Length: 378
View (cartoon, rainbow, N blue to C red):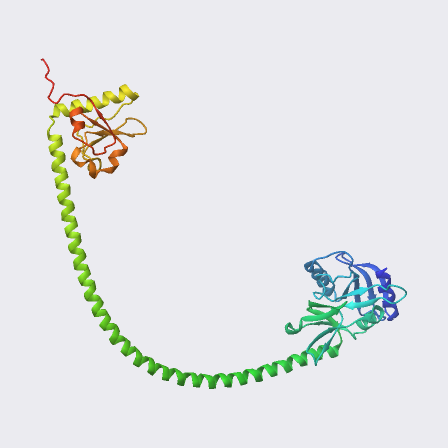
């Protein structure tokens, strides 16, 4: 239906109209091709009923332009398509009764007084005649004028349009308005520049006055700060001296405690002969195997652990190498080794257990070994 209306409007304008005209190379097919009476001009009229991307419609427009064929895309849909304003095109409205088809989008006039484009409506037949005879032509909106407001059914709609069908007068009006606006902008910039220069002069004068005032205030602050710094440095030196004295005293006290602890541990272990020490570790190994089927490592040179009250830690053999217990921690040092309470401890006999008194030392096991060395008969 729309194609026939376009063809009828073309013929009414005095041009020839053909439907479904293909290109010689098959690169395009015009819905309706309009040809001037003398055959020197052609214009394709495309009734775009199906959706199309902006990129595709621009590419199809470029193919027409390459063959010097003008084109106008026509949409009959109520909602403006995405490509409206991207290529030469209009939206038309079908008559509700016997009235004419109307172009209600895509045609605009430039209002110089308001400084912007306004929508224009026209009968489709009249629009086609104007377009074919050059009375309307595609015109690009300058960036400042692309935003256009329209009232539709008592609602305001805002559109961004890059391209309109418009008259040559509107093209000139847009250019003249832009030139006038630029002149005004330059005059405004000149006034603002003069005002900025005056403001800059006043600012520099104020800055100089402020600089002198700040210099005086800074000199006073420096004197006060230097005085505070001297007092602070003296206080810091005094605190540093006191801190160094305190640390030296604490270090000396700790060294004395460590020395006394080591002496107590040496005295505790000095009560045993080498044979008794070996006997003690052998008894621990035997107990571990008897109770838990666990083999433990017996150190060749037992190492006293200060954090276990100078007892000797014994570890299980194998993959996990877990702590089995502490052999013979020093009773006098148990209170200094709180972590000892979480582990099992081993001593030679009940007499050694009694030496621990009420001091908590975890679970203590005595191995019922004699106080004296066992004699062997050779």
